[in-house]
Image (tube, rainbow, N blue to C red; front, side, top):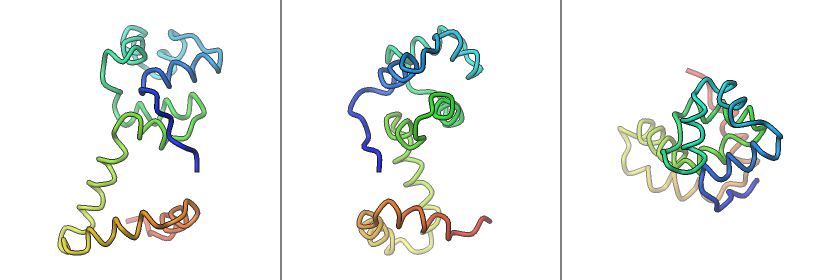
Length: 119
């Protein structure tokens, strides 16, 4: 499993963009946002963009989506919301679910996700 970096979201995005040799303006164009907006995100003056744009950024920068989502503080909220929806009628199972999920390996989590049918 790829460790989550400790740097802020904007710093991480800027560093990855520069590693790729992509200009701020070019990345902003590919993402469909203004260069001013992206610049402010990279300087951590604005909160991270929407979930959709974070997913696009991950693809454009060729980084794992979960890293950007985690740095943006979105993965935890998205995960909690999904689990709470799932366990809405069984609130006593929620703590047990999280305890068990923490014990799973990366491969086990991936397999569990694959095994969940699309609705």
